[in-house]
Length: 93
Image 1 (tube, rainbow, N blue to C red):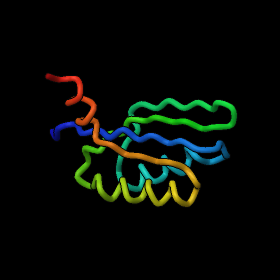
Image 2 (tube, rainbow, N blue to C red):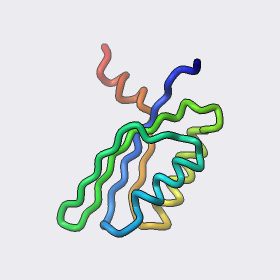
Image 3 (cartoon, one colour):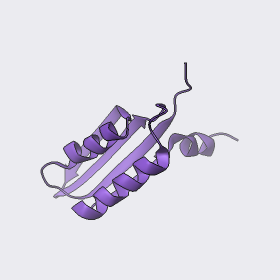
Image 4 (cartoon, rainbow, N blue to C red):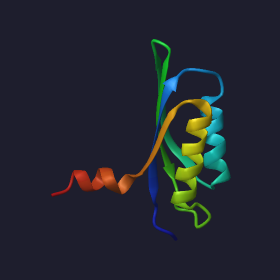
């Protein structure tokens, strides 16, 4: 059984239909699985944070990051992808 690897994806920009669908489609195509998701709209601004399991051997972090960055450019959104290990390391001394 492979070790679980996770990525944290953040999305920020003006709200419009289809943002969640398009981000999830890229994750699906890269063989990542959404394990937790939260989204809000405040004064017309869309904000989403999700955690994706990227443990699959078919899920290359760099490819996922590049595809989401291109999607962000196409949609006029800020989309960032970070490995969850960054957050875990910040809380260990």
